[in-house]
Image 1 (tube, chains in turn purple, orange):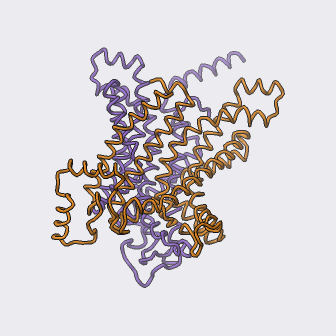
Image 2: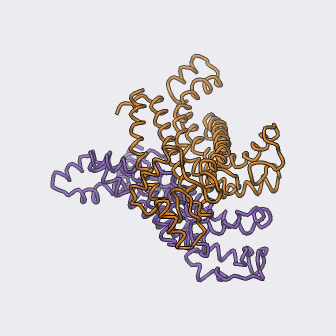
Image 3: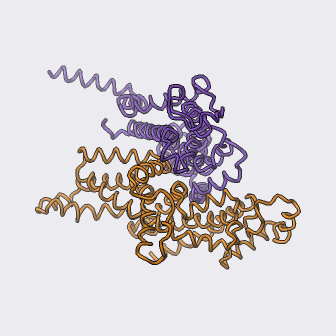
Length: 300
Length: 321
């Protein structure tokens, strides 16, 4: 009995030794059903959207006057919109636009936020003061209002202008989080050791601090992906986002700004509404799952 | 506290100046004439535009124009709206009461819903009721406001017919009567419900977690040991402590309501500031756009100020910097 217990304890020790924090987190995440379902859903939506040119049943740009606002049928599974474009095809192509903008601006925001936050957190002092005052300053602008006004000024510049505008205004939260995490991480001995053997600030941030701040960044990135997709769809819905000819989930919902469409043509607005909501929901669940997986206190 | 308040207000002044510079830069970049709003935005006659620009001083160096613009604002002159043919202050003044009504109603809805759900979930954690509230929270966090608004219109206005789908007042109601005020509240109810319900999630979650945490604390055990009734413990001892942090979120709400109102008012074609902003951009009524942008930026700034000040009252440690 005792021998058995000892053996068990040793086995536990061994397995505990072998596991890096990343391996533990991965195992926890794999066991989290909700997060796994969400990841599968998001991957599926992404793959379908990016395969749009190959699997879409119709050309999403083809206007068909004879088939306007058609009910769902055998040929058009989800019907057609006001210009006679096939909803299923629009949904696939629209997903490609919305997800691309979401991913690209999320990466830009994470990049800016991480750079500003890690520099401010590592150097401290007046560098920190200047950078953080600037962050506070940008934070003071009402995000949506400024994005709308800026997007209206650069309206003709297309998708890339939109990505730049929402990225330039959206990085403040990430910068703050990365800064506070870097500041607490900096106090550890290994950073002092790295400084004392003559590591350059850039190298210390990149090699020592960032890997330890990475979990925070990943959680932030998932949440930001959701925020960015919502920003794009909201802007397009208001008519200041993606140019109106390009299919996107927000643009599809734009037709629901007319009450008669909401009242009697559910097939036009329900598919994009569900696509957006379930995508955001799955991203949020993934974010929660990752946060939980990296939290050593959680016992799931 | 007084010194802290004064210091926080003094910090605002340079930020205000910087915000005004950014907004001015936007005004310069905007199509048409955003500073005084006197050039016809639909005109494409280059001679007319050049003549007007010269007359209004739009060809002066930027710092001269900026000085003139700020001097005008300090005298409450925000230029004229070309579309509405009246002063910008007047156009905004007509819409502002609608937006204030909407914001106040949505705040009340947020607090009532969050209070009820948070309290219930906090008192009965890990039960079916708690899990349903949590599930609802996840859904409300995920659903974008305009999608929620469309669903709300579809269900409550068209299927059930409880609320009007658009506008802020029924036609043919005389101002000043009770019917008039009821009609206004009825029109604001559905947009306020959507706006308020979506921000409930974070409050509910916060209140729930705080109540659960507090219920493990020593003072609660003492109260229980003395034989205090469960209701009294939760209502008097725990809730009072849990409500304090929530109060501090109020300032940040102003910022989130501003963004939310722009979208919600547009979906419901509710004639408030947000909808005015969107229609003015569409009609190139730049003077109105710039004034609203400035106004909303300053409101956000004041919201953050209130958040900081309330936080200073609640948590004295913040005051020492």
